[in-house]
Length: 309
Image (cartoon, rainbow, N blue to C red; front, side):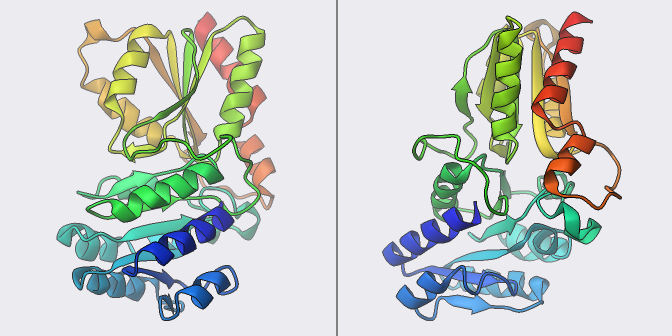
């Protein structure tokens, strides 16, 4: 995903001289092409992420379109006050890109895990929260983000995430992408679990269950049209995310559901994500996902149990 981000950013920077990249002391080699083709528009802000947000705000108020890039927990937890007061209060068009989100850096310990940041950030007025599902969606989401009139948080993986789409999809912030139709269960996925969502759907299909899949890439603003449709026609709606079940996509959908008239809702909601606990294991991302039940087999098993209850 981060390679797709770097390539797309370079292409966009060629077309728009207002684009400038601020880095929190990572990605120097990743952006060699950008630095060569767009000299003066890569700023290494060092290990001073809060200051990076302030600099980006000033650049945006001066008419530029800054993009801030660093490891997700350092960009979000460490900078929450600056994001709230500098970016959101002034509603400036800055794109925040958190790489290695969720459990991508599981082996590096709790300082590098980010399983709560979407829930924190979506509380901030005017901030769009977007979690693309594959490298193609990263490219499309970045293009949409730098054209957005206000601040945007893009949550991306690290590297090696498989492409789900055959080409760049028609993408808009706040509009989910349907990948598969189904009338028994609908899987709404935010972020890098998208291939797992599709594999879980295949397992359910083998059992004769119609399993639909959406890339529900935007937590804020929510695609309420899709939610209204799927909660009306399906028996079960499942949210999937490499993020806490509290506050993220699952929390967002639960809040939306609580405001709907009971008569208009057919489906039950099931949330799949990380539990309300820290990960104390030293392991790679795959093992961390297994620990939290974020595998195709575990998800399909929970869905079967829910539908048979």
